[in-house]
Length: 141
Image (cartoon, rainbow, N blue to C red):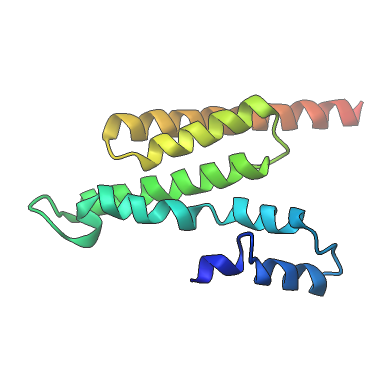
């Protein structure tokens, strides 16, 4: 499958991209590609647990599908950001773990888990904005 091109042990596309960018074709490149592509492993479960996405069941309404899509997209972005260690700036370990957990909460079906995951994402965003302002204030002194 296509995921084999970006994930170890094959990771042919990751190694080719590394060579084109004059990077070192080591396993670090492949693992970075894997962290970015984690959604490819989680998306099938999102479809399996949310029948509305494949239009099965009686509760298929535009708002429910839109809510699931938005929540899953934000969850995937949160997981990828947490694994890569960067959202709007470099993150500390606690923020990374919180973002991955928040992203997983948004991927799990349910309004309560979606809201909890969104709260974690917003909290990390706010903390990063505060840290950016502190850094800018310190740099201007």
